[in-house]
Amino acid sequence: MQQVLTMENREETPFITIIVAVLNNAGMLARCLRSIADQTYHRKELIVMDGGSTDGTRSVIESFRDHIAWWESKPDRGIYHAWNKALVHGTGEWICFLGSDDYFWNRDVLTDLSPYLKKAADSGIRVVYGRIAKLGADGQVVRMEGKSWEKIRWLMPHGMPLPHPGLMHHRTLFRDHGLFDETFRIAGDYELLLRELRNGRALFAEGVSTVGCRTGGIADTRKLLAQREVVRARRKNGLPAVTWLWLAVYIRSLIRTGWGRLKKR
Image 1 (cartoon, one colour):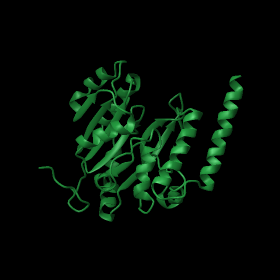
Image 2 (tube, helix red, strand yellow):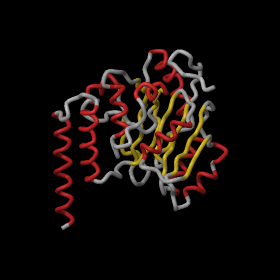
Image 3 (cartoon, helix red, strand yellow):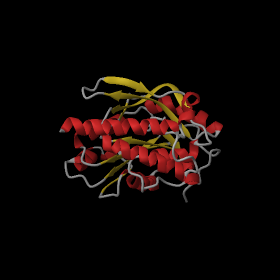
Image 4 (cartoon, helix red, strand yellow):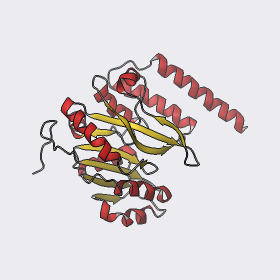
C-alpha cells in the first residue's frame, strides 16, 4: 500500500521527482536528461512524458533508460495533461517540472536545494524556488531571475512572479488543490500556484541557481493569450479579474503585437 504522505511523516533527506515533458525536441533533450542523471543527489527519480514525437526524441529517451523511473511516448492534450499523467506515477515528496530545453545549472542543484526543502517542510511551506539563468541564442547568460518571496509576493495576484522551471512543489499541494487545469494552454502553472500562494508562502533558496533556460520563444500572440489566461486564473480563484498591473502589461502586449504586424507589411 502506498504511504499517505503528510508534512510530518517525511524523510530527513527528501525524495524528489523530476518530470520532463517533450515533443519533437531531440536536439535539446539529451542535455536536459544528462543534467538530471549527473546530479550528485541520489534520492530522486525521473519521469519523461513524450507527446508522440517523430524526430528521434524517443531514441534519446531510450538512451537514458537506466536513469528513468517511468516514461511513455503517446499523443497528449498539451503540457498540463502530460504533467498530470506524470504525477500519477511520481512518488517523490517534492516534485519539479523541467522543459526539454531546460537543464539543471550544475551537478549539485538538488543537493544544494535539499536543506531548503527540509526547512520548508518543517515550516509548512509547500513551494520552494531558486534563481534561474535566462540564456540567449548563443547560450550565454542574459540575466538571472529570482527574488525573495518577501519582495515579490505582492505580484502574485497580478501574474506569475516565480520562475517555474525547477520550482519545487510539495506533493501535498496536489493532494489539497488538485491537478493542473488542462483547459489552460500557457498559464496553468500560474493558476495552480495561485491556489496555494494567494494566501500561502513560498521559500526562496538564497544563493542556489537551479536551472538554465532559453529566453524568448513565446510569440506576441501567445503573450496575449497568456495574459487572458491570467485573468481567467484570477477569476477562477476569486480574485478581481483585472488589475492595474495586468492592464499595463496587456496594453504593452497589444502594442507590440500591432507593431510587429506593421513591420511585416
